Length: 200
Image (cartoon, rainbow, N blue to C red):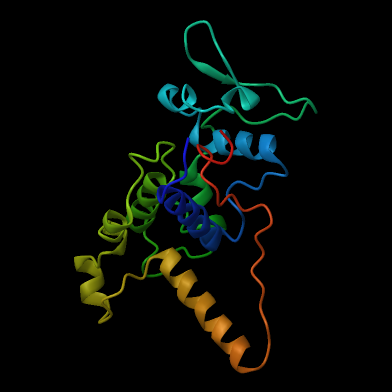
């Protein structure tokens, strides 16, 4: 399957989750490990994607009923069942972020996290054709100020988790730069590649 601009939206989804949690979403040590970790969260890719993916049989096997199943790894490593590692829990939707560290803070209500989760799932759609496009991502409700926010703040920018993390990171980088320090961005274990292109 050829590359297109949709791969950047997949990458952005992974980056936003990592900014929010502090950990890579799909921290695979190699292609097989990473694909299994993707499947733990997103489930098995749909049949129409698998049937067109030249490398699908490297990671999956096709069953007699036409569906696909993850192959057992050669090293015997065990993984959680497909789609059993819920993004809902990873983001801390019900707890005010991972470990409840932002519980009770403005912009960290369950409704805010549900919007964030919905945006991420649209960014991590296996099918590049139906994956959310940049224009529509910017129109997503996650980035819109709600009526409640309008009564509590004069800012026109959402105080949602990922935006706060981004603003904080930007401030830190600026401070380091002005003081002569340097900061490096670790990309170890970060799944920035669209699996339908890079892995499959």
